Image (tube, rainbow, N blue to C red):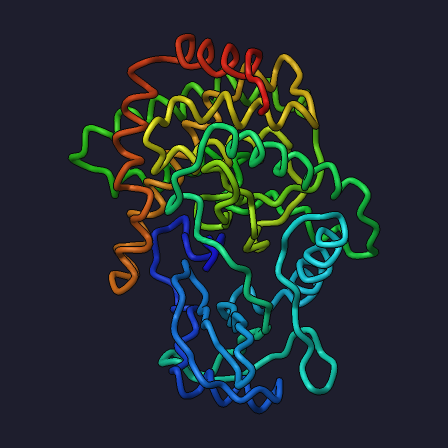
Length: 369
């Protein structure tokens, strides 16, 4: 649950790092839940994750929870993890359906567990969170009206976060995070994983256009705290009346950072396109919802197409790179690749002018039921 991307897994020198992933058994996770939270687990199963471990647990009373065990690298930054937990609570107070972190029996919102998962003793951050109902947005036949509300919610999150007050906000200055759209040129260091694949030429061309067309405009982008990863795996929806869906959960705040709002929008559009039966209709609907809360300026509008393509490039290249290091999690790591390769090729073939025309026309003529 949660497409948790990890900025330290990818090493610029292509060296394979010590595996930071936790490897707790179902039995060990059950014991953790009883020992630290006083809950007797009657059912437990694993949930998919990029670099962490997530367990779906049910107690004797039928209440569901997610036991989240962070990878050892991110577990070291307790200030950041504490702020992420605080922000989830803050956003819930602002009407965003986030998980609630359940305190341990001693009142802690997170605890550290030391374990040897095969690479020497490492420390892992453990949190128990409430379970949110719903299916991921890619598993649901969402309408353009639903996507309008996804865009509106994404902008609402960023707007709400502008009101956040905390002495620890400096830890969100994470410009080195490799998944940030600020760092598109870093993709070049991993392009060898695409050798022999014609897609490599498209990725190279997108990076060059990013450098020449987007980088010069960055200083005019509107800045603030962003979720950073409103992906298809991190947005849950439930069906409501008239075949529509509403967002029932926003997951995974591990890429929370100070960033640019247009990056949030681009990431959302890119991931929501992945399994949509009419992917070219996604951009205008999400954009219309976004701009009902927060208007883009001219430079942001002019960069949106390349930012969406840039995220495709990051996801496809880094996914393939990580799949080579962690072949046991290959299926999950290459989730984007299934339709992402086809979509990146299609968008590149159509070109900036044609795609933008559709997105912006759809957005300007969008009518909400």
